[in-house]
Image (tube, rainbow, N blue to C red; front, side, top):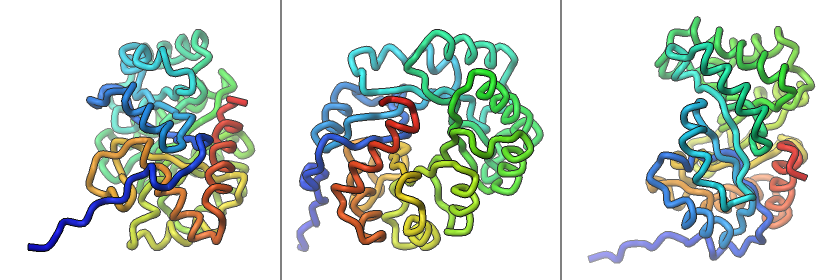
Length: 271
């Protein structure tokens, strides 16, 4: 009988505690937040952005992080939920951002034509309304876009978001789209899918993203990097994504780890 191959442990990467997971979903996912964040710090992840998918999720989940000052918050209504979004939701977001300085971006918001869980006209309408709210509040924006790149970019351009602080979350496209994003002054966050051999476009794109525009994310509990693909993702595994990007770019992983962490803290106004 062949011996089952053991997965490499993230602690073995021996990364310093300066990393940042710019996009995680730790609320309401059966995570033990204290244990997950302790593992993350042991694996070099100091800063974590938790994404609340709507004002109700924010109200119910923000207390999970009271003892963790290095966790910051994002809040937005996902395009999947656009069909049931209301004016009360928008008002709830406005109230939350006004009251809580841990909220650092409106997101993740955007368009998703892959699943089409909400009609496209609803997605576009509430995307625009949330972008307007972000401008009103002078807040950063974090974008979710899947199979809707042309419409998403057209809306952002029409609303004058070029040059505004914007992060393209869970980027999985090729170099041409990376250039379109970067030339508008925006940032790009790369998930664990960059470690997958078939992510050919993404693996080429990370080679040309400017070093000061590059962030890392888990999007946990989804998209675990190799060698943990197929298992539940969490911030402790972020180092494998950093190592793969460093290899693709021909850079030192510890230097990239520090730089991407600093980029996240600077983008979200945490320094």
